[in-house]
Amino acid sequence: MKNTKHRYIKVCMALALLGAGSCAKNFGDLNTDPSLVVTPDVKYLLSYSEDKIFTYQGTEWVWESMEQLMRFTQHITSSPFEITNNVNTRYNNYYLQILPNLNEIRRRVDAMPDKDRYQKIRVVTNILMVLHGIKVTDMNGSIPFSEAIKGRYDFKYNPVYDEQPNLFTNWLTQLNEAIKVLADNSLTTQVSYGPSDIFYQSDWVKWVKLANTLKLRIAARLENADKAKCQAIFQEVMKDATGPISDYDSQVKYVNATYVPFGTGGDIDYRSRRYASTSIMNFLKKTNDPRLPVYFEKNDLVGSYKDTLAQYHVSLPSFIDPNDPLIMYQGGPADWTTNPVVASFIGNPFPVSQFTKYSLISPINRRFFSPQLNQATGKFLDVAVTYAETCFYIAEFIQKGYAGGVDTKGSAEDWYKKGVTSSIQTMNTIAVTAGSTTAYSGDGTTEINNYLANPLVKFNGVNNLERIYIQQFLGMYRQPNEAYVFCRRTGYPKTGSAYYGREPFNELIPRRFWLIDPGEVNRANWSAAMQQQGFTPNAQDLPTLSSQRVWYDKPAPDFGKGQ
Image (cartoon, rainbow, N blue to C red; front, side, top):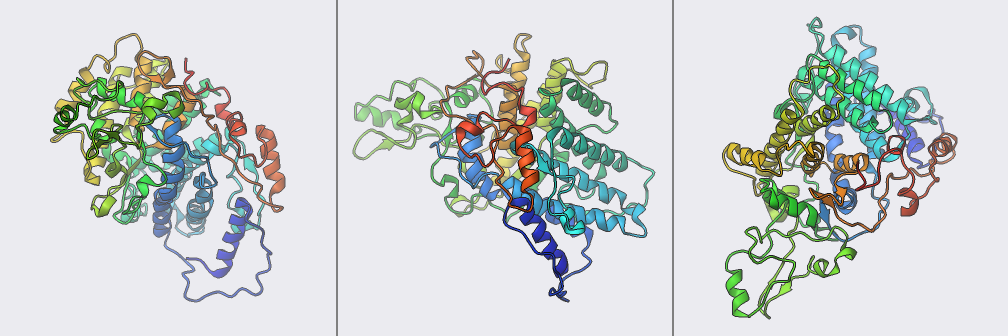
């Protein structure tokens, strides 16, 4: 979409950021290719960035989410693989696939003679920059942003690394600008992205709702480091006339028949099959959670298994209750070293006879994550920012007393119920789209109401905040990064809790990832950022990564040590 010179500058900027080398700045030998589009339509520049926010995650699901983050949160249990250089693709993607086109949209709009008609198109880029930028800083701390794309236009290849407090201040300003412009009904002659906006088809109200929910995401991250700022942001969002995401349709959704993160083969089991942890399985079972068959597959204790056991005079292992009505669902220890007897059945069947072996531990619902497994025809529906997440933030902040005198349009319990309801409905929709096992048939009203009435689910006036936390945690099963950040910032699920206890976990858990030396072109700024944050440069070992934290994480509790 750009002439050769612009493409060359883009590569130089990327190399400067990513440490892949440096470029000379002599363009005398570069010729413009007349077959290239010199003036791209800004509508398609947006489509590209929106698409890449999701589709880059194909490898992330395998190497980062399944192998690392979901084990650390104890949503699943699986073989404990080392952290490799395949993690942190979020960082490269931001600078190579997302920011360039979004900045190009801004540049082109600002140069238009009728730019006033493109203001809403322009500020949508603010929201997308923040959406992925939050995810990048979560694991990296200080990152290039304010000068990140200046290599392309200003020949500046050594961008500063903005510190987290400055990033969040910048992003809140950009979100507020977007909300102001998008909600301005006096701007009546605005150009629209139309269907090229694959998130919302230029429904500006939905974009405002997303911006407000992203403000809540930032508020949650700031709570431990700046509680007053967290409260102020929450109150701003609740006072906004449009408010945050408020229903299924205003969630950020993406479905594409050609995007299958785990492919059509067995990549969902790459290196190891993943299973339910004991803690999540036990809680889902004792609360009769409708999401249980959505999240996990049944084991082999179905059908006439009792007759077979009796025929061969075999008893099940002692950790399984033979009278359990949900015996077909079993979890395994999050850390195999803490219970090697049960762990021995993870991936290894229980022998009944020379002809019969039963798998006892329930795997993750592979079709839910990999809808084209074994040539099936389902589609992968990704919901990156959910109504449930929004509701639980609001419930949490109300419960903590952060609302002040602001009208929150409901109590903590009201928002909690909305969050639980939306989570179950959204997960069921993902399952239906995937052609997977569902939570219910029909509209789910009966199942959801029964769940909300369960004594272990409804508010009891004793541990209401913990109940909000646990439902927030359960609802983030398909949002590995958000689940990890939640566990890291709150310390829940809490070790030793009688309600929902985090399991013993002897592995070191990284609190951050690493950014390697970018080379001579930007080593000075990188070194300054590492020193300012107290990071050991180039360190990739777990003892270091588990002890050094990004700014907003420094006051947070250890995993499982919530208050």
